[in-house]
Length: 98
Image 1 (cartoon, rainbow, N blue to C red):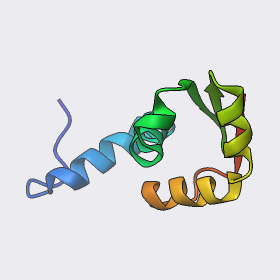
Image 2: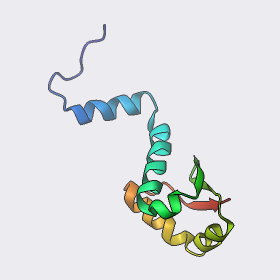
Image 3: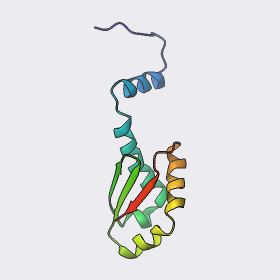
């Protein structure tokens, strides 16, 4: 069994250590993006969202309404800025609506 690095380490520090050691941040970012989309866009848009996928720094969002897709395409930059602020980091640089 490995020896502990610090007996008095905070839980948040231990979790950050675990995430960075096991390279889990990309997977956590993918989950966080879905949660933030649902939280920020509201139930009216979430109802028509069929898939959300983060690849690199591009967010792919599949919508079942072509009218909604067209409306959202006018506000892409605002949506990207809003999502990045909610994520507290510049994770998304491009939004693709399908």
